[in-house]
Image (cartoon, rainbow, N blue to C red):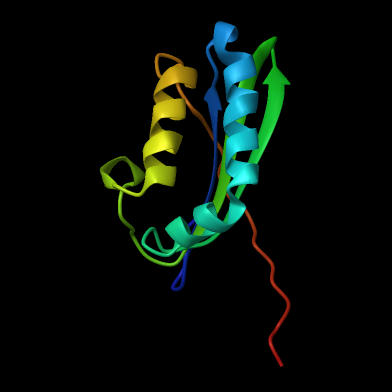
Length: 114
């Protein structure tokens, strides 16, 4: 959903069946490097990014939820070492032959700022 201030998205991506352990390693890598990951969000104009996992129909998926304030730098074009490793994990783990699961935002609520 796009509104006057941000784009909010939720997408899920299938993991290769033989790369589930590597996908868990990827998520651990991101957690272990939290401060460095947080620094990469600015150039991408990400206000918030959350990652989830789930098994659907016997297939393991990773999901990205993001709130982006403007179009940002493509992570694949970044030379930041965290982004380079993130892209390498993506290429090793995500089965792009499976269409991503895309969710439509119906409502978004935030409390008023006083």
